[in-house]
Structure formats: C-alpha cells, structure tokens
Length: 570
Image (tube, rainbow, N blue to C red; front, side):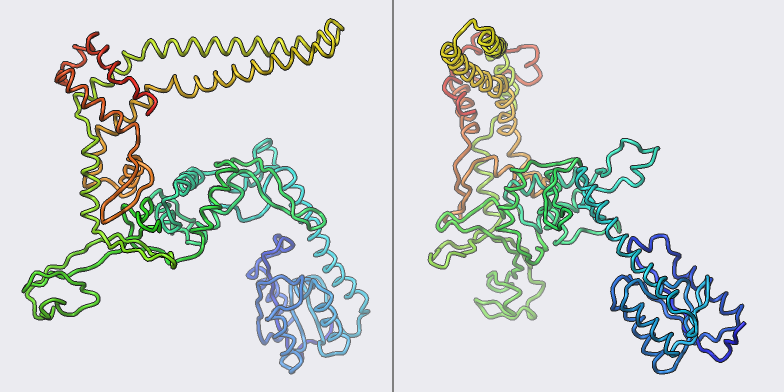
C-alpha cells in the first residue's frame, strides 16, 4: 500500500439535475462514502468542494476553482465518488488526465479504484471517454424518446401549461391505456379566463385579478405572475396543438391528444386581442365597473378610469385634489388649518385622447353620475313582476301551437333529407348497372343535390331558431324584470355590472358626460309590449292568483296581436 500521508486532498462532489444523473447519489450520500474512504486510509482532506451542475460541457465554476487551487499547490490529490463526477466532456477529462501524467496531481481516489501518475494512462482515458460517450448516447436517446412522444400526440416538455400535468408511470401495467397528460381542476378555471378575455373588455391585469377570484394559484399558493398569465393566453396547447422539432431540428406542428378547451378560431381571436393588450404594463391596483366596454363618443378612443382623493374645504366647501394641492384652490385655506376636513374617494372616467391628429373636447365624468344615468336607462326598460309572470305564461300559451308545428316541420325536412341522400346513392348504383346514362346521372344528381342543399338550409334554420324562440324571449323578459334591482344592489360585483351594461346595447360610448349606445332590440320590443298591454288590456292578476287564473283566451289573443312584428327583434 502506498503512503498517502504527505498528500493533500480535495473532496469533489457533483450532482446535476440532468437526465444522466437521475440515478446518481445525492451530494450528501457521496460525501458520506468519500469521507469514510478518507478516514479509512488516513487521508489529509483540506477542503470539500460541492457543485450542482452538469459536466457534459466545460465551464463549471467550482471545478475550475479546484484546478486553479491545485496549480497553486493547495492540494495534489482528489477524492470523488466516481471518475465521471470529475468530467463527462473531453476538455475537462483531458485536463485531469494531463495533470495526473505530469505529477501535479499525485493521486485520484474513487469508491472503486486508485489512479496514479505511473499508471497506464489508457485506462483512465478509456473511463473518461466512456463517461463522455454515455452523455452523448443519453442525449440522443432522450431526444429520440421525446420526439416519439410528440409523434404520439403528447407534449414532451417537462414543464406544462397551467391546468395540465404528466401522468407519471403511464407506461406501467397498473396504468396501461391511461393518457400520458392529464388535466386538473385548474384547466376549467383557465377555460373561464379565456372566455372572459374573448369578451374583449378585459385587460391582462384584469385576467390576473380574475384568476385569483376563481381560485387559480400556483403550487406555493401564490398568485400567478403577469408573464405567466400572458404566456398562458399565448399557449397553443389549449386549442390542442403544440410545436416540437423533428430529427433534423426543424420545427413541426403536432395535434395533441390532451384535452383542448378552446377552438383554433378562438385562439386566433385571443392573439388579435393580445396584439392590443399583450405588451407588459404595470398591474392596476384597482378595478373599475365601466372601464373596458366604453369608448369616447367624439374621437372613438378608449375610456379609462382613475381614482382621486378630494378634500372638501371647511371654509368655502370647494372640492380640490388632496394629492396635488396642500391648500384649497379657491380660498387658499391650508389643509392643516382645517378642522376635520371631509375626504372624498371619487372615481372619474375620461377619454384617453390617444389620437394625436384629433383634438377631443370631452371632459371627465364621475362614476356616481354615470351610474345614475345607467340606472335611468335600466328603469326605462324595466317591467313589473306581475306582467313578467303573466307574459311568461302568455308566451308559452300563444306559441305552444307554433312550436309544435315547427317540430313537425323539422321532422318532415329531416325525413326528406334522408330520402334525397338515399336517392343519390341509388343513382350511382343505377349508373353502375347501366340503367341510366352518364348524362342522365349528371342531370338527376344536380337536381337532387340542389334540393338537398335547400332542405338542409331550411332544417338548420328551423332547428337553431324557431324551437328556441320562447327560451330566448324568456331570458330577455328576466333581464327586463331584474336588471335594475341587480344593478343597484350593494353586493353586485363590478363584473356583473359590466355584463348588464353590455347586455343593454352595443356601441357603448360616453358623450357630453352621458352614456350613449344602441339599445338592444329585444329589450325595446319587450318594453313596447309591456306598455301597450297595460294600455289596451288593463291591469293583471296579482302574483298569488296567477297560477289559478292562467291566461284567458281573450287576453291571449290580444297579447298575440301586440307581439306581432316583435318576434323578429328577439
């Protein structure tokens, strides 16, 4: 046995997160084994160097520091668990081999064997070469495995978008046939966020705040960052596709087998919206009820909102900004000299005036005033509860026969469609048997296909419109009856108020400090019928007697006449 007492040793421990080191012992386990060797052999250890980095490429800082210290004479020996802990690339491996050959390093000890300057260098070169080749082969195998997984329709990236997770052990007998990528409850929240963003009234900070409201948090229970939400909205995974390179490194699109939550058209629409809202901006601290749906009625720019703290002067009752002024801007009374001045937290809406070539003269409007104006509009289309209950019964009674007739028409058109399809199939067989000529086939086929197209058009129109007319009307009736109360309720969320405003009409604008928009035709139609019904039919039964009274034939006929011409608006 050689004498090691004069040598000084560095213990070098390395562990990386790469695939080739998944089965390698942890730094703590390596240190335990190597220190046991040092104690058994009586080696003089001057330092323990730990590094968590792959050795496939040169450039490890701790390794470079160790080599520098060896050159300076601090140590002339190395203790490590295995030789591949020192190197997996030819540059670092050649450096270690050369230092050993020249005697700068006198001894390298691993768990399995010793290496000395007098040894045959081929053995060490072969082992370092094997470590390097193992990394190369493993890289090829990993890339091939990931490429094959992509070709099977499963995204091979370790990190998946929010809502998806890898099914660990999918290839074991216990999980045979299970999908390789699973979705969790977060995916349904992501679907809601996409739906909200597609409405066009939300910014990315709004979506971020909405994600918290829905309970979407990361593994640490914290809110997802702005960039995470932005990348989520840009991810193709959610409409069922992903990109992965082929064996030549060229990018290739794959159709995934994972659960998709939006269509490709919806994804493209999101990207168009992101073109306007996708650039990083500061996250707004406050949410505003009407920011988003409204635009300026003069220049067409978007309308923004801001909070202002205003002080009411105790002397002249004038209101001024607490942030920009330390004294009343009218009577010059200092705030510090006022006794308990009243502080108002107000919200104002104003045009952003972003069109440089257009001078906009519109001023700001306070949210309370805007709220009152919208209340007045809702009050104009409001219907009372007695009429609401009676109209629901009247609608179903008046249109009961119509719905039955439409159902019969749907059945009839469906039957005719099947007959035409059968005829087209028979024409091909008749031509094959020589019963008709090619010209006859062409003429009869054109006639049948033209009729089939008309039947399918009629069938689709009836199926999508007529049979759901009552349900559509019922929904608008409910809005007319409840919207005013919901809008004014103190617990109604800002998002609900935005949705009520958007249901009221289109082309939502602010002009001369007043809301202005095109009122929804169904709401106007219902209000018109409401007014005309009271005028011509008189009052209605109380709610408690409606179920017993029902709809009289006289009032049903009259109601049908009053509704005439309004169906097209619903």
